[in-house]
Amino acid sequence: MPRAARNPEATQFGFAHVGDAGEKTQRVGHVFQRVAPRYDVMNDVMSGGWHRVWKNIFVDVVAPRAGENVLDVAGGTGDIAKRLLKKTGGAINLTLADLSPEMLSVGKRRMADAGYWNKVTWVQADAAALPFDDACFDVITIAFGLRNVTRIDDALAEFYRCLRTGGRFFCMEFSPQVAAPLAKPYALYRDHIIPRLGAVVAHDRAAYQYLAESIQKFPAPHALGARLQAAGFAHTRADPLMGGVVYIHRAWKG
Image (cartoon, rainbow, N blue to C red; front, top):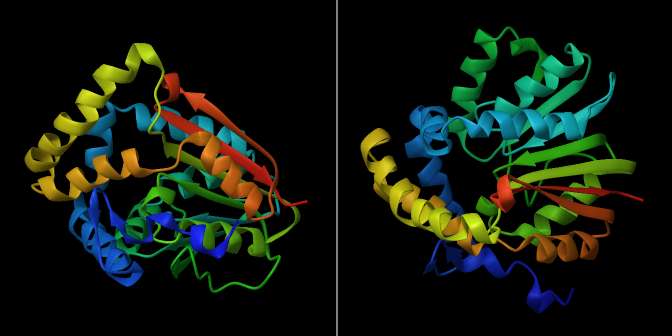
């Protein structure tokens, strides 16, 4: 991929254009600083609880193996990390990275309550500049976080760098393309209802307006697959859930 074509989202904050990548990163950080205390509640409200089903399916697809080194990026409140540990009986070496200290604080409390506090290494980090050695993870996951990354192509390159040969990458994310029967009602819900729910439940309409807009600006499944391949990944595939509202993307480092 030509350098000029990399990271086209770096100056887009939802539908708004910002001055540079640093400003976008700062704005995204402010969003999650504000929503962290009510983030999990809003996920239940917005999805009608479906996010729990999607996350369970995602972890089944990831299928972590005992003894593997696993990195969960944008792991936030620990929803995916907790499921990964539960699935393996705590027999993986799990690192959780997130840009937001507020989200990490919530995650630490939740994991302590679940009895997994000492099973996680917590790292505050930007997905596009990970503080890890080359080839140090067997599996990297990111769920509902990639669309908030300022420099997506740089992040994909970092995921590739940090995976060992034969390592697996898994991403679950909302899609801007939804199958015809759901397309219109879903667009209405995403664009109008979610921001209103954000105002009522989280007392922050602007944050959830951005989150709704970020779904529309995220690459279509085939486009993300092409960008994974440009980062060096092989055997890419994307599987839809719920008519394409959500996709699970997977790729391997050859």
